[in-house]
Each structure stands twice: as C-alpha cells, then as structure tokens.
Length: 257
Ligand SMILES: C[S@@+](CC[C@H](N)C(=O)[O-])C[C@H]1O[C@@H](n2cnc3c(N)ncnc32)[C@H](O)[C@@H]1O
Image (cartoon, rainbow, N blue to C red; front, side):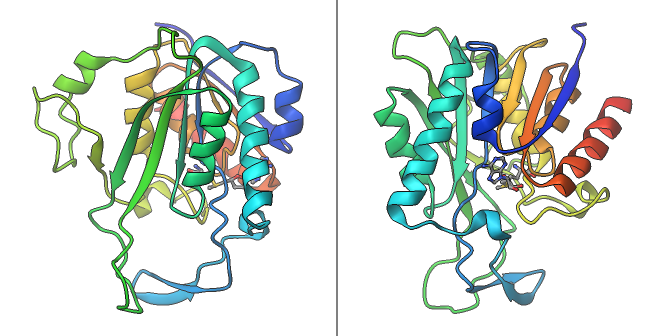
C-alpha cells in the first residue's frame, strides 16, 4: 500500500505555487472564492443569515475576478504533470469566469459535473428558483494528454446516498450528494466546507494510490481528508491561519482511522 502524507502551506496560493517544482502534481482540486459575499441574505438551518463568507470572498469586479482566476489557474497548470487533471468548483458567481480562463489557458474540458444537493436550503425571497447545485469543471492539461479515469470503479461503485446512481450503470454527470453533514464539522467550522463524499468521488475517479493531490484553496481541508483516506499524498495551500489549523486537525484525525 503506497504511503500517504500531507503538507499544509500557510500563505497566498500564487506565492506558494510559484515556489513549487514544475510538473510535480497529478491532480488539482480547487474550490476558489465564489465572490458572492455582497452583503445580501440567505437561509441557513431555517434562519435568515448574511451571505458574507469572509473578506476573501468579496468580488473585485468582473474583470478583477477574471484576472484572479486566470492567474491561479495558470500557476496550477505549471505544477501539473503533463497527464494530470484539474477540477474547479463554483456557482454562477464564479464558474463562467473560471471556464473562460480554462479555455484561454488551453486546458481541454473533460466534463462539467452538476453537483445536485437534494437537501439544499430553501429560497427566502420566493422570487426565483431555489439554488440547489454547484458546477465542477474537469479538465486535462492538453487535448492529447492521457488522463486517469477509473471508469470501472465509477460504474460499479454504489456510492451510497446518491439517489441518481445505480450499481452497474455508467456514472453520469449529475451527482446527487447531500450538503456537508454536521458530523463533518466537529473539528471547527468553515463557511463553505465541501462534503467528504464529493471529494472522495473526485479523487477515486481521477487519481490513483500514491498520486500527489493539490488543493490551492484548502479551506477546512476536505480534499486532504479524502486524499489521505484513499492513500494519496496531499498538498494544501490556505491563506487563513485558523483554516490551516482546522485542516490539520481534520486530516490528522482521518489518518488515524
Ligand atoms: C471556497 S473556500 C474552500 C473550502 C474547502 N473546499 C473546504 O471544503 O473547506 C476557499 C478558501 O480559499 C482561501 N483563500 C482565498 N484566497 C486565497 C489565496 N489567494 N490563497 C490561498 N487561499 C485563499 C479562503 O480563506 C477559503 O478558506
């Protein structure tokens, strides 16, 4: 069994990425700021709360946000191995800018996945549809690259809890996975923590044991938890010290299991 390990870097991802060895990473999963913190309100656990996630999530305007996504995606491309792949998650606030930047940088799109949240919070205004999904774009570095995809595992794995997935059927591009459960928040809270199930699927589908998985916006460390659970090596970058500490607690606990 390949040895797993994890490294957490406290700092700005652009600076940390510029110091990394080129072509050293097999898989990037990035959950960048969604730039949706605009002082509006949303519904959480049945209550009206502010949508603001933190200073890091404020928009710099359409062009500023686009230039930011272009810069970090270019930095990730430099460290990705020739056959490596990259995932970006987002909502309509950010995903179109990320998609345009990916195309401009010459990445080749493999899939756009709709992550459907069957237990999404209701819409309070009742003036438009309830937001209940996020988009994940999956790309390889180059059109001719030979990327990893564990087709058989995706076809045969039952993926408990996914109402859209039947064992033995090809996995489709709509994934039904519930929002992050409270049981995954026992080490502390992060406002945009992803469910481990989502990251397990990404990692099992598109990397192999012993591979190096990088998350440039590590947050609470969900990608690291899923990576070490499945014997991958993890590198996480995060700008907020408290989130680095939270990631460390979560990933260390996952390693002990
Ligand atoms: C959407 S959250 C990621 C959440 C993560 N997927 C999880 O499951 O916990 C984005 C994170 O990126 C961090 N961040 C924002 N800008 C950054 C930058 N330039 N470099 C490194 N981290 C950054 C924020 O502090 C935040 O924790």
